[in-house]
Amino acid sequence: MSYRKTEIWKTVDWITILLYLILVVAGWFSICGASYEFDNVGLFDPSGRPGSQLIWMGLSVGLIFVILMLESDFFDVFAYLIYVGVIVLLVVTIFLAPNIKGSHSWLVLGPIRLQPAEFAKFATALAVAKLINTYGFKLTTIRNFVLTLALIFLPMVCILLQKETGSALVYLAFFLMLYREGMSGYILLSGVCAVIFFVVGMKYSEVIVGTTALGEMLVSSLILLITMILVLVEKKNIRAVLFMIVSTITAYLGGYITSLFMPVDYSWIAIGLIFWVSFYLIFLSVRNWVWHYVMIAVFSLVSLAFMFSVDYVFNDILEPHQQVRIKVSLGLEDDPSGAGYNVNQSKIAIGSGGLTGKGFLNGTQTKLKYVPEQDTDFIFCTVGEEQGFIGSSVVLILFAILILRLIALSERQSSTFNRVYGYSVASIFFFHLAINIGMVIGVTPVIGIPLPFFSYGGSSLWGFTILLFIFLRLDASRRER
Image (cartoon, rainbow, N blue to C red; front, side):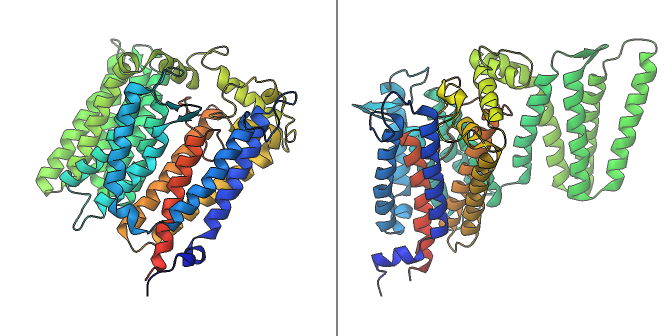
């Protein structure tokens, strides 16, 4: 018996839809609080941002209806075609988009502005899901892993060429999904460690204690510590760990004795220990024919190479404004009227909300326009000021429930295509939430990515809506038999 279209309303996950509706409505109220002017246009006037967002919300309802009415196989069959179409649109945007605040990421179609990067997320998720769903596909093979990375990095590169760094970095979220699908934990660990090494290296790059470069000393010590932990956890080789500890103690003791007669840079002792430990692990690998030791040694040596590349990447690759933002975030510079202005004003707005907030439309920081981009990238400061700690916590809890719900739905899928797409959706939402909130409260550098369903903009709302409801349509298809 053919599946009836009316049955979709019985099988679709209404819990997720309810969460979506609550977040979208809460987002609209936040946009009102951030952009409404009492002596200007009304809340429902389409010439104002609240009224304009309301139109996009209404159009989203029609978009949801179209997505849910499509056959579930549509997304699998046309995944690559959708991906190619979006890539072409991204390339066209590089050359045709006007310069808006330093980036070429918006296509202007009369009164409408669209940002193709927002739609590339679901297209990439579909393409990656289709590739991994291929018969006999194993992510652990080099060829398949490279193909998967190519699908992820191609739109990322296109968006970088549009000078939209924040939107490009979102594609790193796919690595969370790849880890679920069998990617080596070393790759995910390497990514996390790279961030830690970069932050620590930059934070203490100019600190010299005696003749020791503190930044290199701390990063090298972290690499050595993580290497020992990996050997202990992965191979449970206590003897090897004890050998490394004894070597470390001996090296530093020798360094201390030498320092009594001449200056000693302890960072070079730590670096030398990394080489010594790596060669020892390679020896263990050859002797016992266990390749895990080689992987740990490679991790140590690559981490060391990364440490020495931090200065080059920061000074020669990053743009000047990106350098300033990172320095301000790390406390290396104090620029309250420049790069740090947004974050400082955002913190003031959130802090002024107190426990219960000042109430809807009563935020002084937002009403006086102290926070730039307060209805887009910094929308969460409006939530903090008007709704206080309680309201902000409720919003974060709702997002947490949504992400956990998406993970639960992904786990119950019988199809690899559905599961991979579901985890991609959850990963993207998590990345946006973590970076945006961290950016607003000054924990992460300002890279400019929207808060899902809250930040003003039709492209953002539609992009997240399509991303979410394609998965809900795929999930509903589990009962289509």
